[in-house]
Length: 330
Image (cartoon, rainbow, N blue to C red; front, side, top):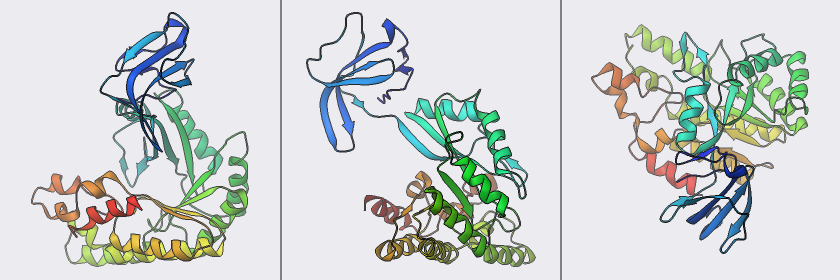
């Protein structure tokens, strides 16, 4: 059972009743520092009291959570709803995606504004707000991608961090050559600007030039099935980019957040950087990384194999999931 102070329903019970007062009794309250058996009193969407023998107003709706866990709503910091990329579009729009999120106990998502090359960041931000505002079923925020570089982009980054927009994180790509990829100079400038603005830079870390050349060679050799995706970007291609991103962030005196890390080699590169960098570096991985592996790319069923394609790819090394769980525990 998952309950968030901003949620509008718990197990199908409408909280918008009894003058917006709710008591959740007898549950096991899960916080970051431990678990305790207690009651939770919520008023107008705000948790007012946690404990036993609470004194609450009359007419409060009560839910018995005996034998259940009562947890804060989850935050998913990396979603892509209604994203169009390389001729494809994500299956979920902001309504379907956030409805599924709430059903699973996630009450905040953070999506990515991804401008086209040359497009105004402010224009792209407005487009994403237009897509999302009338569809979302939960709280949401937006990271903004820096997919090209110029003085105008730098100026717009400063505007986006202002109170009017409230953006505090930007994403840069070291992959997707000729689409979103920044070269090292522009990446340095973007991360440096993040440091000046006290915004968090995020990086998709893969060597886009190596991927592009490997793709050309694989296609020339007739490799067109899903296994070619992993072959074009092995662990070394990811770990090299993680190391390079960490070096650039260190030079810019900036913290760094590496998105969707998928290999043991990449994790090792991050751990080495963490031990010597002036600013903190963080790594993110996916549920798929700890739940499956890249052996599926060679499945004889094309649809099965293709369903496992993502970037960076799942790794065929069967020890990867356990290594990622151990890294998450650190």
